[in-house]
Length: 124
Image 1 (cartoon, helix red, strand yellow):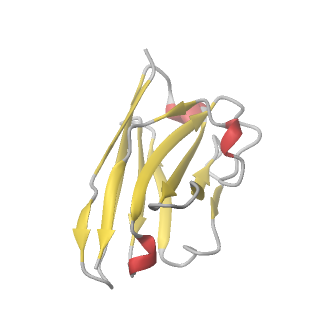
Image 2: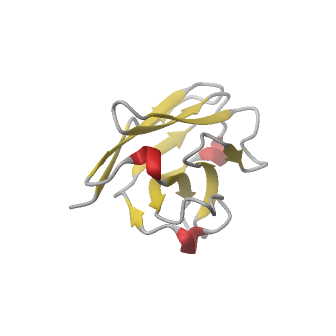
């Protein structure tokens, strides 16, 4: 069965860094659109970044220059490298996969078929 498991979250001071991981099973990451999303308390879930089957990346304006999405096809794992974290980045972070690989963007959450359980990132 399809499964996405996030890890790497935690508590950090402003200005710090974290790398989130998303281990996928039951499907091949290289053939899917993969994305990171986040949801802060009291707010709607928002797109953070995506990477398509060709390796083309897209990042939300709020994280450009600070966050970088990447993947390791050999390990079937998705990553989100986060630097220069600030308190506005505090949220539950989710990875997701979309089978419609030709339409890959963090702005279209409805396109993502599979979701992980999330990992908490707290910046203080």
